[in-house]
Amino acid sequence: MSAAGVKNRAAALFAVLVLAMTAACTGGGGSSSSPSSSSARTGGDRDVLAVKIDNVAPARPHTGLEEADVVYVEQVEAGLSRILAVYSLGLPPVIGPVRSARETDLELLRQFDRPTLAFSGAQSKLLPAIERAPIDAVPPSKAPRAYFRDPDRPAPHNLYLRPERIPFTASGVDAVAELGLRFGAPPPGGEPEDSRTVRYPSASVTFTWSAGGERWLVSLDGAPARTAGGDRIGAGTVVVQDVDVRKSDFRDRSGNNSPFTETVGAGDAVVLRDGRAYEARWSRSSAGADTVFSTPEGHRVDLAEGPLWILYAPRG
Picture (spheres, rainbow, N blue to C red):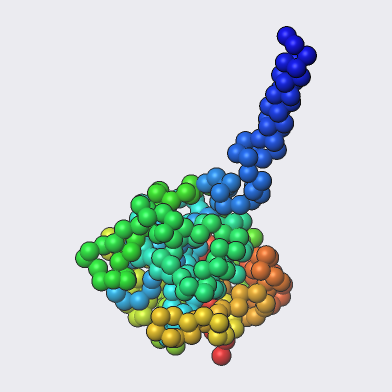
């Protein structure tokens, strides 16, 4: 081989070596994207699935809500309420009706390690904030095969999710543990409680203790909350968390201001479990921190077995 040929072959080998080293440094795809980006994550990295669920009369009965590990209720436009259901240990085949996300959801969900959020859409000015948030957003535009509309229900209360068709796999992580909470014995004290109603300007949620079922039966706007199969929906523990609700910079299509619920801060709370009510305090130091619940005497508040419902009740 000529000297020129040897030189060219050496150069080629060197180029191949450089390409191999570059691929190794970028994960084999030639991209310098951080492993924490959505495109680089796998389903097992997403610890919980959160689904925004409609909560007005035409949306009921809900489908799959009874299988949620944690259920949040928050105020939305016109004084109505909406649900954010969190799933971790198992997924029902269908969940819904699915509705749009709100700014409150982004701060609330920071308590989980990059959750997946399924929602129907959002106000156009809010979409950039959703894209920047540490969540994996999966609206119908990103997973069209995962959503379908029920022709027997009126729009927009007829959009449903098939969670098996989105890029999420239940990891076995416990959503309650992700919140820094745990199941255990009740704290000392407490007062007997048969029923508790949380009121919003145009909505209400009532919990009635069932000693036989050892759970709190849920009623929405005065009507028993039922599954798609007709069974009553219940909770093992209910937390009523007093919060500040203020106007946000966003409005819905009708021009109504979208309220923002402040979930960072501190305040009073009531914990319902085992047929008793416990006065408590809640505190959350930052968006990246868990919410801590304790009795006025400083005792940790543990939960009864079963779904956890957390209601953000407007102060005053």
